[in-house]
Amino acid sequence: MPPRSLEDLYQLVKSPFSTSLRFVFFLARAPYGAFYYRNTDEPLTLIVRAPDKASYRSHVESFFRKKLSESQYVQVAGALVFAATIACLSWSTPLEHANWSGPALWYAGIILSLTAIVSGAQQAIAIPSTSTATPPVSSHDDVMTSPSHISENFAADFRKRLLRDPDSDVYRDRPFTENMIKDSQDKPRLAMLFVWQMPLMLFAYSAACFFAGLSSVVISPLVAQGGKWGDEAKTVVLYLSVVVATFVAFTSTSWGLYSSLRKADG
Image (tube, rainbow, N blue to C red; front, side, top):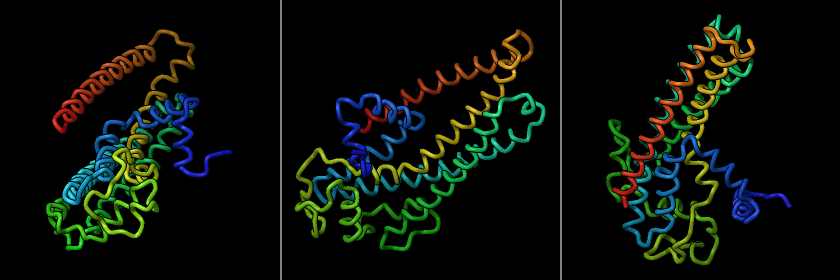
């Protein structure tokens, strides 16, 4: 029987016979995995597992601050990817000798980057609306500096929406109370994880489409010539050398950055 929901799909992925599917999901999050775990998965898990009201409010405030910062980053970075893609599509001579996949990937990247910008703006606008107070114009962050800005109704409803089984006897028709969580292994619903990581995911895929399209435009003329040594081959060698060096440097520094931050938080 095919999965009917994200939760059913998650149970399928957990089975011993679905290692390859788990690997596919891991690869799908690879372009933005560090941001995903730090800004979405871990904060929402802490909210779900909070043992009391004080820690719950603290985790909610921290989560919203991270998401506001992330949404602003996505909007700026998405606009840069959009502008860079449009500029590349204005090339005439390189595109005449390029494979069709290069422009196609750039067109896809335009759609993804625009959707990421709109989705990030939507989150930035929606987050302050969860407050009972009017958010200051100068800073979104100020609205979440005090736990009193989070209403009791919102606190209970937000946590309930995160839970995988919100209709259980522990949570049904009850306001937020001390020691509400009985199972420390509770995890947020996959649907909510997907909702909150959407802008970052779209931006990461738009950036991946841009670089994939650029690689196609640079490499395809050499392939069409049968790999003969010439100016195209020299261009490809230089391009791939820079790509590999940049990828190694970026990956290693990102790993070191997030490892240090994880240790600091721990």
